[in-house]
Image: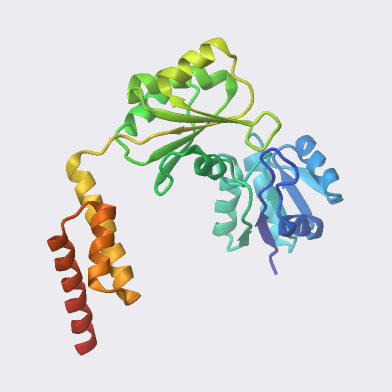
Length: 287
């Protein structure tokens, strides 16, 4: 019977940011596949995990990936860890998952540390809808093409960036996006953690004076919506709110008062939507 691949998130900085379940799995599996064994051994030693370790990273993923698949097919259970955060996000773990799916090998994904969500929820930028864009290309032409393709995206945009590339990335963002709101998160969960709430232009001025250090998550405000898009989105959200409140037995008068204030709609519109929901509900009962 084939074994199981466990996707185990590891701390993005602070070594205590690991779940009890991940520690248990790392102790029990037959093998741990790590992006950088020298880096991961520090974490394993810190949590007193004494288990077999092998490397699995970008430049050996094809050869080693097949070897890991053979181990899994033979019945071994393997835990996959990355240098920081959740395996499969901007790292070769994605390829191993695809190989496992092709061979019908069971995959168990464990929740845990993830830099992009940790940065987003503390950024103050809209977090209800967002796009994760990972690392931008080192090649300027490809980087500009990528940014140009998403310049009209309304959702909050999230990027990972290395310190030596940050300034050039900000320059290209200013060129393509204009001077939007931006949050730059640095060294999250570590001693020198920093969240810079600013604009792209001000960020460029800041990093002209201060050399970027550490690992960065860059969060950019989405493109401004036009009026028609805002009205359409408000109607969709209002309908969801009305349906939810009607389902809970809320009086129509109370629904109108709350929805009118929250979504800037007139009372007649809201009464009409409530009435339509009630008519639809009656039809469903009759049929």
